[in-house]
Length: 252
Ligand code: PEP
Image (tube, rainbow, N blue to C red; front, side, top):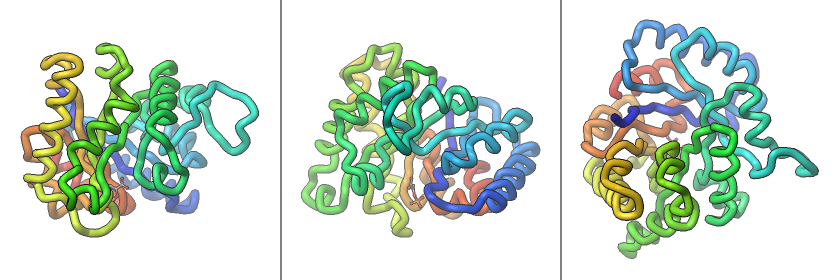
């Protein structure tokens, strides 16, 4: 059975004190929400991972990082390895976010290496994919997403792909207030699941969690999450306020 997930990507936001307050508020609110086969993941900046992991020990959420470098250790000034994340009990790591593809020129091949490095240390990659607006307008969005998945994930074994979460994030919807329609999200999620079925097996495709990301908020989460192939969301802006984020969690 697929795990349904709501993950909060805080990006480069919050001071330490603000982060502590938000994490505590979310942890307290989660105490009253039955999660069953559902998971809540908080992805604060690196600096706050240890604090988040400490709170998570007694709370109903998991901790994710927003990035990693694909090596165990070494002369990579400023970088953080999956080994380090594992040592802090970080269970997830976002990779392939469009902001990293854009501002840090991350290639498909580099993301394939990050995927391998994370899996080697038992950390689940949350692999982001999605097209920019001109690609959608030109009708190329399916091909773009297929290439992203093929070149960064489809070298994995069937067992390994079972340990990946995919997040479809149309770049034109990220931080814009314009979400994909539930129909657009469902169409792409079904396509991604079909690709996984063709490459691996229908059973593996059925079990893989595919999140939607891009201006998902307390108002539209219900409708987006009710789509057959949408298994939850990767939430940016709306994950920065406890009330909004918790409201999205209750839509799962
Ligand atoms: C994101 O950056 O992963 C994201 C989904 O952002 P937002 O929810 O703010 O559009």
